[in-house]
Structure formats: C-alpha cells, structure tokens
Image (cartoon, rainbow, N blue to C red; front, side):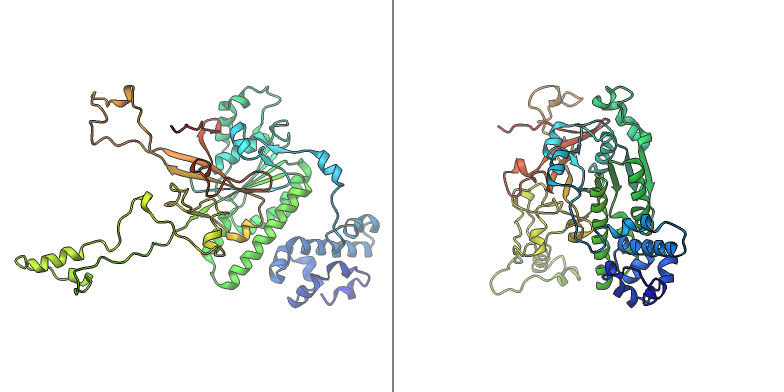
Amino acid sequence: MTDLLHTLPNFPTKHYTHLIPSLEKSLITTTDLLTLDPLEIAKRAQLPLLDVRRLANHVLASLQIQLGLIDGKEALRKYEDSPELGEAPSLRGSGSTIISKGWSAISTLDPVLDNALGGGIPTNYITEITGESGAGKTQFLLSLLLTAQLRPPHGLSRPTVYISTEHPLPTSRLAQLIRSNHYLSALPASAKPSLTQIFSIQTPDLESQDHILAYQLPVLLARHRIGLVVIDSIAANYRAERSSSSSSGAALGLRSSQLVQLGHQLRRLAREYDCAIVVSNQVADRFAPIPSSSPPQGPPGSSPPSVHSLSSPPHPDNNQAMQSLNTALVVPFPITTPAQTPTTHYPPLTLDHQQNFFTGWSSGPHNEYQNHNLKTPSLGLVWTNQIACRIALIKERAPIIEEEEGDNNYTSDGVSRSENAESIPRTPWKRVMKVVFSSWAPATGVEVDEEEEKGTEFEIWSGGLRALAKTKKE
C-alpha cells in the first residue's frame, strides 16, 4: 500500500491505520485492492473482511471522484461519518429510544416452551440450538420460520431467511406445520404464514458461505426487511474443511480468528437490521475418563494373573492350570451399573470442569441420565463466546412405565405381563430442552434437584414442538 498516497495524495489514511501495515507486509498494492476479491485479500493479510471491503470501496469512490464520474460529497459521506473507521462509537439512539422500542421476540406457539426461553427468541441476538441428530433442531428452526411471520406478540410480521449448509429447505414439512398446527390453521388466510415469505439459500462449502454472509445477506436484509435469519447448521462447512486440512497450531489459530470474525459479523447484522439470528450446531461425543481401580488380587505371595496364560490351552487333567485360566478370565475392572458409576471431579480451572456449565451436557451427580451420553457442541469455546444464548436439545431413551391396572397389563394371549418374564418394555425417545446460558432468560439449574436439571420435556408432532406435562412423583 506504499503506492496509495502516490495514486491518491489526499486519501484519509488515518481511518485505516490498523489495516495498512498488514497490507504492506502482505505486499498488497492499490491495484490488488481494486481488482482482487476482498475475501482473498482478507485471508492473505489476516484482516477482518468487512474492514478490507470498506477500504476497497473507499479507494474506488475516491478514484471515481478524481476522474469526475460521481459527486464527491454524496459518495464520501458514508465513509467519513461511519463510526467504524476509527471514530468514537456511539449508540444507535438514546436510552429512552431503546427502552421505548419494547421487546421483540419470536414465539414457539407453546406457552411452556416460551416461558422456559424467557418469552421466546428475541431480535438483536445470536441464538444457538445444539443437539445430536434427531433431537429436533431442524423442527425447532422450521417452526420459527413460520411464527416470525405472524403479527406481534407471537411474531415480527416480517419475512425470514433460511441458509442451509446440509440439505435444502423442506417445504413439504413447512406446509404440514401450517395445516396441522391448531393456532396456524385457525388464522385467516391474510394472517397465515406463507412459504413465499421464506428466502432459501444453500452454501455447499465454506468459501461460498463467507461470500453469502458478507455480500448477499446484507443486501437481502436491507431490501426485504428480514426479521429472522436461520443458519442450519453453522458447523457443517467448518467441520468439512477441518477434516481435509491439517490440525496444526497455525491452522487452529486461523480457524479461531475466522470464528471470531463470523461472530462479529453476525452480531453486527443482528443489531443493524434489528433481526434475530438463530443457528443450529452439531455435537461431538465426550468421553469421561475411566475411574482408576486396582486389579483383582490373588492369594498372598502369588503374582497377578497375566493375559499370556490365555495363549496356550491347559491340559484337561491339570486342575491347577484350569484354575489359573479361570483367574485370568476375570474382568480386570468391576462392572458397575449407571447408578453406581462414580463421579469424576476435575479442578475448577480446567476445561473439563467448566464445560459442564456451557455445553449443556453436565456430568454432575444430579445428571444420572446424562452421565453416559455426554456431548460437546462443535466449534469449541471460541464460538461459545460469540453467541448470546445456547439451547440444548437432549435426546435420551426412556423406558415406559407399565400401568398397574387396565388392559395394557395383559399381552395379546391374555397372559399377565408380570407373569411373562420375557416381556421387554418399549423404549421410546425422550427429548428435553435446556437453556444452557442466555442474556435474557434464566439458565436451567446446575447441580440442583433432578427435576429442574432435566429441563423442559417436549415432543415433536405434525404441528411442530410442544411441551409435555410433568408427572408428579408420589
């Protein structure tokens, strides 16, 4: 960028003092700034994409003014008055204006779920919905795409955007939601949500995702006054890129900076266009360490059993050899039931201890049904710091308790289930929603009574998501 002042002597470089040194180090010239894609320049110089794009547009506008192609005052006003060019930032309105604006949120059309979420999904924030496959993440997002079109207080009366990184928009399921949901089907035709008010975009790779979020999405938000942006899912392209690239420290550091830039970009869009941004996230298995246990001890003075005793079969007439073989077949670790599994305690400052508070899958003593199915949301702690709310959808198998009276106590042959030893109860899926952390709603308690820790149980039906009534324990 040493040739910038030669090309434009009066260019205000004071607004870009944080960019020019890195551009000069990467040998970026003014010609490169005008001809190359800003995304490529940002990657080469390791700079924020939005700042590089703003610099390129400012240089282009200055050249057009110098050539007399456009009006100078109108073209440079948005660059000179922008608070993001080194000037002191200011609030977008006074405090009274922000307060009088009121609370804008998207409802789930279920009062129990809305109450657990603190009123719904609000605007101006990034909300993440995480969970394993089949937990209900996409069903949750599809319901929000429709309810955001409703009039307040259930919606925003604005169109929505669905950005998919894995599969196309399931329009047949959306149509089923409109037909089957009792509230949506009872609305008049003029007030019902429409599939034409949902803009669908597919991003097959990370490069196209960055381009869409940086260029196409801001234009779409400005032209159509979008109220909700859904990204399903935020981690798919990053995980695909990581599997094909190296896992060195430099690559992980670059990935962390990309996630920080992504979070900054989404937060800026949410605040500038007063919209809600909801993303889904995948999870990975987290394995708890096996508790240490001493191997079985033999008689005093005898050596511990060795697995090498299995290599040669003993003689059938040698009782001592057969006894040694039986000793070697003993499992070296005791088999424990889930209720007997000891809880592993970590030092408070370690990640293994702290991730119980921000992942949604805790290994505390009050989470007996989660201790054997621990998960960790993708993209790590760096991405966790970029979002304002994390909602975990947990899927577990829960056996059905048979009724004590009624026809269900007997099989089709008229045999009592209590007398039929081979009768195995069905084990359907149990889904629970937990608010891990949030800027506006109370989080589901950690290490409190078991009923509160499990969160809000819900089910997926043809009309969307609905909470299940809690059964009182006697």
